[in-house]
Image (cartoon, rainbow, N blue to C red; front, side):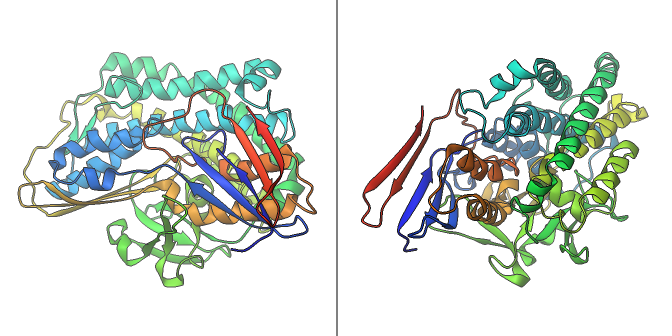
Length: 476
């Protein structure tokens, strides 16, 4: 691309992982395009080759320190497929309970720690205070409750897997240990506080959306397809089901068994990013853009599986009419609706008769040379696809991570926001923060298991048509 000047945002802040944005400007300083470069390399697909398939749930969860449970569950489901078995009912319940703990902690982390500085303090707040510490100073009780809500999700994970991060729990054929009645009763006692905090967050984001409707309407609002797993009734299902793609007009574009994903989803590669670009095959690269994650799932589904969350979903649907439906800022609203859904589902599972059962695993030998495991991770649909030899050694791995599905949409979002806010060479930090905020809507997880710690630097260089630097903005 030939342009007169460009802006580089490196790194993008308040994300899990490392990436940069390049905004291309014309000679008048008008943004004409933008690209989101994911600069980390993830080599799991290759270095897992040769490993016994039984090790994959432990190895692949190390892809991420924020969502290890998601990779572990998708991997375990792929291994179940290789064994060609149906796991015991108690094991299924406990896996889904673990899954709900992951959702609770992940959605709470993003809303209270990563998104709240923009939403509660404002896009143009001094970057020195536009962070979770600044939110603590202004709204200490909100953040305290948010931290405790995330902790509650982690306690569910720990009660099952022995630790909050990288638990050892889901394995081929089931889970590694039962849930004790003591832990069940302890977890049940935590729901009243968790519900109260979730309701507070839901009211915060609903009120924010109503007060900022004009911005929601123009901020990375575009038509796309929306995707997620649903059951036979069209209800969103975060652990299993068929994959549905729904168009912006509400019509169902496709429904298929996730095991048949290769017939519907292609993967494109660009030389400027390590993150692949999945797309809906019948419509081609770029044209086949679809969104996953909270906004994608709720737009794809007909209803949610629990009463309080379904009522909140219907309220959001009425608020987000056709003109707002594609607004990327609605990710924050739908994320809190999903958090409520997962709290209700977790409480429901903990009252199941089989939740403390002892029949939790089936053993076996490989029956198939291929296994596919698909779940809805907090950030969207996650696919693990393994091919093994007759001894069960991994021959090939294909992983489509949730963030990957949104890659086309994220690039489209930052381009739209840049064009909306960067005009006539008028550039200030708050406007660039909006470009970063367009990415944060999707809560992408760019890294494997490495995360930046502490304050993230920001360096923006503006070059003229001769490549000479004319301006620099720096945040240490």
